[in-house]
Length: 150
Image: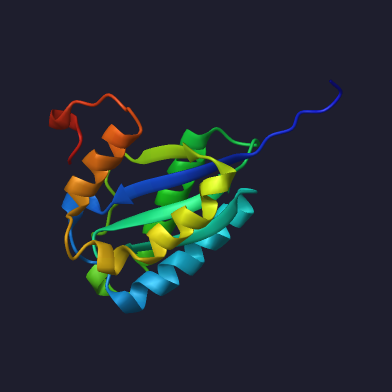
């Protein structure tokens, strides 16, 4: 085959360090726009970004140009650095060390978009930790809870 074809839809989740509820509504919308720009610069296509005060969900088509781990490293590093310039409130801001990255079927993109956009309502009944463990189980990801949280 003379060409390499690649299309990987992903659902990415990560939290603030120690799940600190610092991402207020005003800064979240700016953060999501900035993250969209980072993804675009990495040749990833952002489907949607959302979340609440202590974590973000990202639906995107990941690039073949960089390993997913590199995309996450740059996304987290650059967005953290940028947030620190917005307000003294973010001077010590950090993302958690890890992340969850799940592949999704293209036929589930619209369901993922709705799920991400309903995060505020969703988290009235489920914490980030409960949600993350539920998603790990749903996707049959083996984990050791001792190492999930920082």
